[in-house]
Image 1 (tube, rainbow, N blue to C red):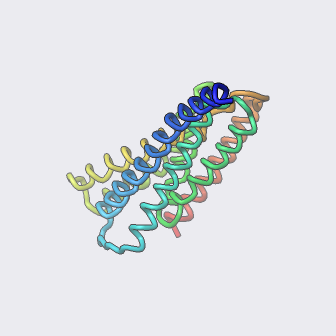
Image 2 (image 1 turned 90 degrees about the vertical axis):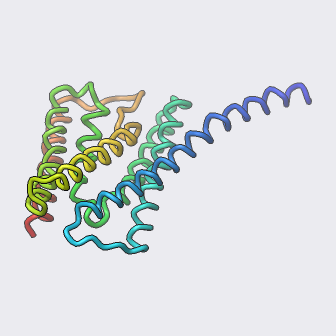
Image 3 (image 1 turned 90 degrees about the horizontal axis):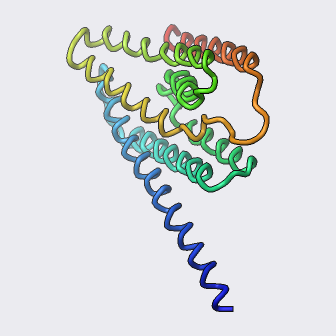
Length: 212
């Protein structure tokens, strides 16, 4: 009985040794990214304000994001079952939601479309639609920075920081946006039509926020 238990114990220990660091990295990485994102938000604000409630909400939201994305990474490494991967992708999607609360909603098209563009190389032409949709909020925010601070070092720092933060978010969410490894895939034409519809919805969404 003991001889049978030893291999099982060793296997469980090996699983824990691989899973725990990934989860810890996700949590700590999300926490750090939340702090950086909060600093960026203060940098680009015309009238910088600091509240503990707002800061805690943002940092906790990013921490949840990091944790949920690490679950997706673990699932892709250790499981080939479609229902497991689908579930973890759903968890990753839920983990994205805190990033879109308040002013962060403006960047929703960038994260979603940019995430698909980065994680779906097989889409080819459809990826360019995603890139175009993702670029619109970036240009709008960049234009707003120029309007607030002019062509200055402040504007450059704010724009570069924005690119770094959101590129990191897109990279971290790769497991959420990646294609399922098993099962049927949508026809390419349906993907393109769906992307166009989503793109138009996102553009109207952003326009409603910017021009309200």
